Amino acid sequence: MPARSLDQWLAWLERAHPTEIDLGLERIARVYQALALPRPPRVLTVAGTNGKGSCVAFAAAILQDAGLKVGSYTSPHLHHYCERVRINAEPVSDAAMCRAFTAVDQARGDTSLTYFEFGTLAALWLFAEARVDVAVLEVGLGGRLDAVNIIDPDVAVITSIAIDHEAWLGSDRNVIALEKAGIARPGIPLVCADRQPPESLAPFLVDLGAQPVWLGSDFSMVSKGQAWHFKTGSLTVDFPALALPADSVAAAIVACEKLGVSVTAKALQQCAAQIQLPGRMQALEIAGARVIVDVAHNPAAAEHLVDRLPLPEGAQVHWVIAMMADKDIAATLQPLQAVPGRWYLGELENIARAASPQTLGAHLAEFGVSDCYMAPVSQCLDKALESVAPGDIIVVLGSFFTVAAALQHLSPNDAGIE
Picture 1 (spheres, rainbow, N blue to C red):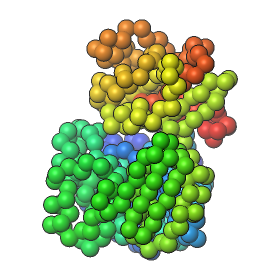
Picture 2 (picture 1 turned 180 degrees about the horizontal axis):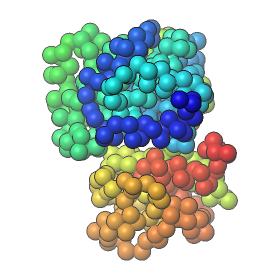
Picture 3 (picture 1 turned 135 degrees about the vertical axis):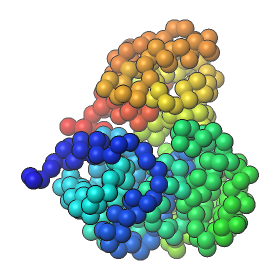
Picture 4 (picture 1 turned 180 degrees about the vertical axis):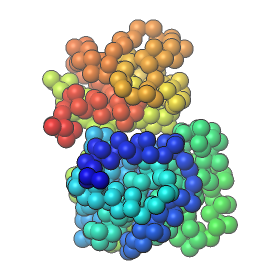
């Protein structure tokens, strides 16, 4: 059979398994064993409803700055699949990814794998090939039954615990917490950056024999206007500003310390000044207008976004939003009502899971909003750019697909699109 291109591999993976999500470790563990990969010397696994990608990115930056060779695995991607697998912050090549897919395919025999499981094994294969010193792995969904949980971490992180993916994880934070805590292990540190962890979490970790490290009691991250003050028993750092969620940054610092990496305030400040994760409060200036794009797609993320918006008095937000139909749309829109705004409801063409602009409009009508512009995301952006007044901000949110479409339209060079 002729070698597949990356696009051919991805097209095949999308239809190779009967369902997109099939939680459970039995199948992937069988193929992982067949691959016989050496375990990375150190493993950091990150779960959480929001802030996982930011935590992975900041932890990887700290570890690389300390001189380690770092493999990081995140999902989903914005523009190109290889964004998911990075060695020292650089995405692997298409050719490398194809080699990894081929190795996984040859090892799996007649075992069927989901798109995410296949990609997870490919990432681990690439980390073995590159001989990374540390692997930083982002959980895809939940934790206990997620594909990355086939590897025992040396340190685990839960960034936040909120309601999302209700069909799989339910709508009870106590239950969701236990699913995410499935990445914990006896005798291993688990860093929790949720400021109000559900009551179920601490007893579970104690019974397991894990070593919980709590935001608020074991370490702190305190806001001082736009600045942040971080403190543990051994380290104090002042950050003039942070481009990433502060609590995820704090969790990353503590996790790296628990991995045995020596960190200094100066090095952390330099990492914070240099890092920018696409689609996370990413600020652009387009034709004199300020545009912020953020992948917020659930109520907790929307509330966090509103809290961080730099909005001058008397200005308004031009909300450009497109969401998936399986999300809690009404609850995600609710926090946005606290900010004066105009509404542009985007259509995500060729995305089967996307909610229609009319569906979004029906939910907004429940909040008394009737004046909405409905069009494809690109046209919504153009309309918003025509309508902004001095001081106004255009905010794009709702899904990774929404942000990808916006960046492709607004700033294709910055988005890495040719």
